[in-house]
Image (tube, rainbow, N blue to C red; front, side):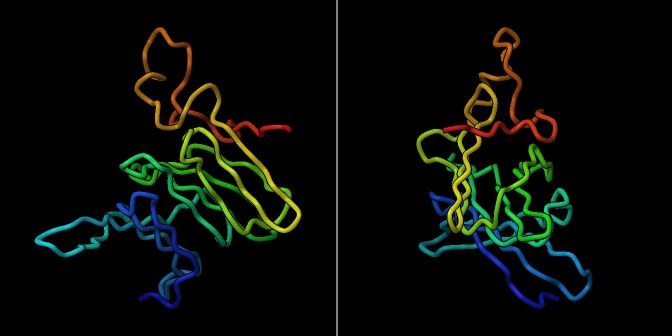
Length: 165
């Protein structure tokens, strides 16, 4: 039983909806992922997966989905005391990176031009991260044996790189 919806995120291509919700059965939050498609001239929104292990991110206050057609990656930001950012491959229910935030985040965005860049902003703060050496959407190239670049999904915690400016 869902007690309240805390935050939602819609993928840029409107193919995936993420809904962070508090339930009666557990004190923690969960995120239900919905796939959106057209069928017979109507829009259908079907549950695809429920994520319950959110990478110790804490109380989620904003989310963003990646821009590739499958919207595979979900970024989560939490409020104090954690002030944590987590990036997940929601289809695999895997956390692929975590990073401490410098303040409360009010908006997350994965760049529509380069999926390897993530921004978090709030009152008097802006932080940017990049996945090391690649675009998030460029997993096939990263997995090429000769490339010398690891895929983002194989990156251990804290391998998101903070961009300095």
